[in-house]
Image 1: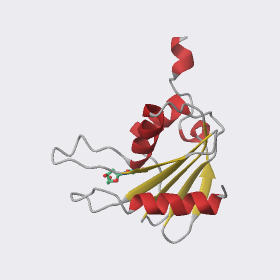
Image 2: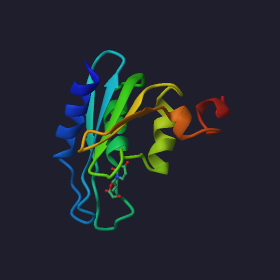
Image 3: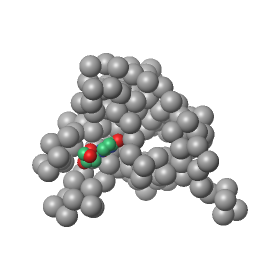
Length: 131
Ligand code: THU
């Protein structure tokens, strides 16, 4: 699975976005260690606060199907620069993804920035703190 293929998958996931309140569609594609791709979109709610972001949707789908090991995450939105995950998503990504696992932040213009949760959430609180 190439980066471009995973980006196309995230774009496809974005088309399922349920975002009638913000009209801001986001897609995510999460590659597991065994090569499976889990797609996610943002799912909004009339109560606003219950909105689930695309990244968390993809992660929760994968975890609910027994996958805990991941190789790559792509996030895509129609932003000026590459879309950056919110704080809540960073904490959830930190729970399941290695500090150096590639995260591709992408926009519809084709801008791509590769980062990692180690860069996005330094000095994090995570599973090892409770061990
Ligand atoms: N959103 C995501 O799904 N992922 C992000 O990384 C940023 C924000 C969603 C949440 C909400 O549905 C909409 O984008 C506007 O904030």
